[in-house]
Structures are given as structure tokens and as C-alpha cells.
Length: 517
Image 1: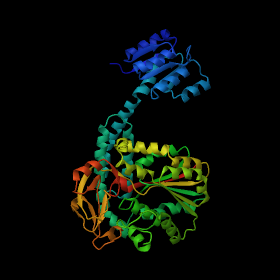
Image 2: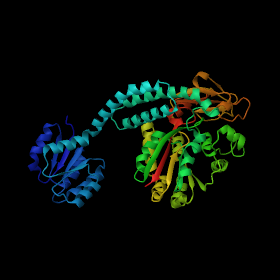
Image 3: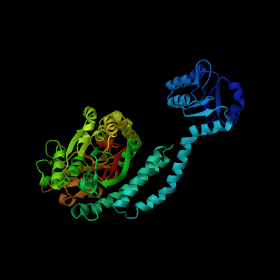
Image 4: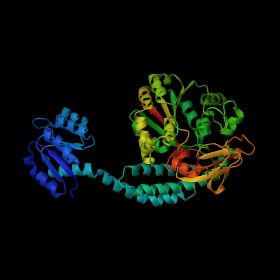
């Protein structure tokens, strides 16, 4: 069996016998043609792995042949071979998405190296990445068991995310499965850490990290106080740290990254709680007492995030910040396109806030739409889908447009999301919340060993609508299911992306400061 099938098109193919024999001895199968028409035909017939294409052939030339080949298979690697070093020809060939080009006369070793780079690059990268992660595995495992503080947990999550993204680009799933197991173990330890420290962070402020309700004080106000240009605060709902790392390279031609950090979402890691906490600078319990006209509990009627701009105005007034601000919430493609048309108006304020809900809609829709279940079947696919959305979104258009003028861009989110795997039974009355990752009610029945429970909501900074109100949070990749029709709902929600509970992916979320170039 040959290493690969090579289609070589050259009108002087008889003069290339030494090169062809050399490649055949190395294990390649060479299909030879003398003109562009035959090259196009053979692409359909023999399905080559690589095409070696002479730029100057009678009849249909190399560049036109390249165009036709790309119509047949846009992903087929084509190496242009030419006597002509003219810049315009090279630019046209590169624009036609060639994999490489060689200048005649070509030596056999040159062609071999080119083929190895094209055909073996992924395999070589895979082997190197897998080997490097194997060496890192034991070190990461030891660090996870060391009793980390909140800064060290951020570093661990960054390292795990780095390796997860590296392994996305490798062949085979063995290392990816080992990574999944290691991340599961990390989540088990992280849950214990949160359960042990969360109450002290909320009530005593002891050695706390930056959290949702302190984000403005710790991160955003310092930028606004120093900024000499307008500031855009972009809150992309439900944006995990790994998703940020996927869209970061897309933004880098337009922005300079100043800082990148991770902060801790409050519990529940749910929009109603965490995003309102960001804009108000208050815990949910404080919001319910100080601003009851805007705060809504789970059992209350009406939208739970209708007053984010009001919460922000109150925080600015309370902190005595004389800031001209504007607030925009984008919930669909149409409203995004409308903001594109008025993008430069964002720079007329000290602070312009954009809340962009698409990633949240994507994760929720995944449980409802079979097509999205197929498209986002695991973390790798979920990241890829998020990247594709961003590249084609009105949001990217907005950021590209305003990057032409000086401003600061702060990108963050309210919480992340996790792919759930393990069902945990819970029983509640009709007023119990429907979220799969946390439950709030007055008559909850559950196994306390399988949840993080807050029988006294004050301890975790949450309101207490009823005397017997209790909150429970799922751990790691668990999710809550009622006993009624249990198997149906387990199958329906398993492997979907959810939020509201405790995991690295939900709690540790990005905050990035960029400056327009």
C-alpha cells in the first residue's frame, strides 16, 4: 500500500523520470498526466492526496487548472511548480490557495520534503503533542492534589485548557480521553475547594478572588479611571474560557491584548444571578433587599434580566462615578445588524455596554434542536461552532468597524457551561426551579452526598423568598432529573451543555482588556 497518491501534471513529464522513480521508491504512487485537462479529469477519477502542477503548460495553463481543481475539491493540496518567479504569478497562485510552490529545476529531495510537510504534518504534530501532554500529565495530576488557592486554580484551568486545545489538533482520541478523565478529576477537587471557601468569600471577603459582584470594583473601574479613550464593555453571555481562546486569534489583527485574566462567577452560575451581580455590584441577596423593584426571584413572574441598565446606573451612582454610559442588549441577528449600522455611536460615551446573547442561545438551543446536537456533540465541536459563529456574526463586524478608532475593549461573560453526563435524582414541588444544574425551592428532596446544599441562603449571598428556602447545586458534570419519566429526560439532556452548578468550566471565566490598533 502506497504512502499517498500523487497526481503530477507537467507537459515535460518524461524529463521527470528520475524524480518520479525516487518518489516511487519512497512508497508514493505517482499518477502522470501531460496537460491541465487530463489533470482535472484525473482528480475526479483517482482522487489524489496531492497534486504537483506545472504552472506553464500548453492548452489550459497551471493557474486555470488550479481553479478547476479547487472547484472539484477545495481541500486538495496543490503544489505549483514553475520556472517563472514573477511576483504577480506567485501572488495569483497563493491566492488560489496552493499548499506550496517550487521553482524548476526541482530536486527529488525538495519534492519529498514538501510532500512530508503536507501529508505528514498532522501526524508529526499529533505525535509531538501527545508526547508532550504525556510528560505533563503527572505534573498536572500532582498539582491538582496539592490544595490550591484561587489563583493557582486559575493557572491549573489555563493549563488544562491549553492542552485541551492542543489535543483538538491531533489524530486519534486516546489522549483526548485521558484529558477528559484528568479534567473530571480536577473538577472533583475544584468542587471541594468551592464548597469549603465560598461562604467565607461572600460573607467575610476573606482572601476572595474577583467575583461577579466585585468585577466592576476590581477590574472595570480601574480601566475606566485611567482610560483616555472610550471604553466598550462586551459581555458575551455564556462564554467559556476555551471559547475565548478560539476567537482570540480572529480579533488579534484588529486589537492589541493588554491583559487576560480569569475571575469567579457567583453561584448559581446562571444569567439571572451572575449577570445582574456584575451590573449591580451586589450579591443577589443584597439586590433583593436594596433594589426589590428590579430584582426577581426564581418563582416571580416576568423576565429576570430586564433591569441590567438600571442596576448599572445604580452602581455608578452608588460608587460616585460620573460616567456617561449606554447599554445595548443583542438577542438576535437583526438587532446585531442594527448595531453594526450605528457602531461608531458607541464611541460617543465614556462606557458603552454590549450584552450579546448568542452563545447562550446556542447552548440552550442545543438541547432543543437535533441539528445542533449533531453539530455540537462534544467540546471540540462546541468550540468550533462558537468560532464559526463569531467569524460570521454582526458582533465581529461591529468590532472590526470600531477598531479603526481609538478605544478600550473589555471582553467578559457572566458564566460558562459544562457538558453534563451523570443524572442525580431530585424531588421538588411545582414552584421548584427548572434549571438542570441548580434547584431552589422549599420542599426539595435529594441525597445530600450528591449536591452542594445551602439550607441557609444568606451564607452564600442568595435571597430567601420563603422561610424554608433551600438551594442545591450540581457538582462537576452532574445534572438534576426528576424521578417522573426519568429515563426519557436522562437521555434527552445527557451530553448537552448546561450551567448553574459548580465546575471549572462554569465558574472560571475570562476577563480580557484590549486596545484598538
